[in-house]
Image (cartoon, rainbow, N blue to C red; front, side, top):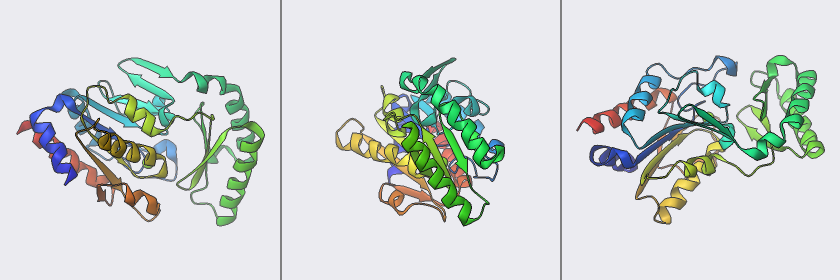
Length: 258
Ligand SMILES: [Mg+2]
């Protein structure tokens, strides 16, 4: 079992282990209002303890770093906006390609607020999410069509996510790139995620293992009713709710002490 390999590495050489976690749907339950998302009780403390002992512990999210910072302090690293932002220690670095697209993102956010209302639009500055959770099917189609049209007009990238559609600068950065950039000195890695935005990271760990860069790896899928079938093909383990991450993290902390 891949998780056993992670625990073995934690008990023998924790400085060479990297753990990477998505936030929404993985460390936190998905809720109707994305602004109110908080990690499952007990998760933040466990991640912090692991962060002090391991080679690398990071949260890798589509959210901006400014949101992730509410819950995770250094030495836990933060990758925001699918790898466009990175916080290591006190510094936050932004991908230069994303900066060039700021004016277009800002104008597009204004247009989205006019079209769908303040509550539906999550403005992440360097990207934009339009939510339709709780809305009727007609609204979903309307949002998707609007985003596709705006993507053609502006050159922004449209990405479908859970009950939402996102617009991003047309960079090729992904969570896979974000994780690979954080693997210096790491030879055993784990990634946990729940959504199609996590797939590039799922695939990247397998590729780096095949290439001999990683000695061992694990991929945990937090699966639910909305999970894309593609996700299962790339997971080494499946859990059914973010609260099950507590047991996984406790197993890691126990391994560190053994
Ligand atoms: Mg997620």
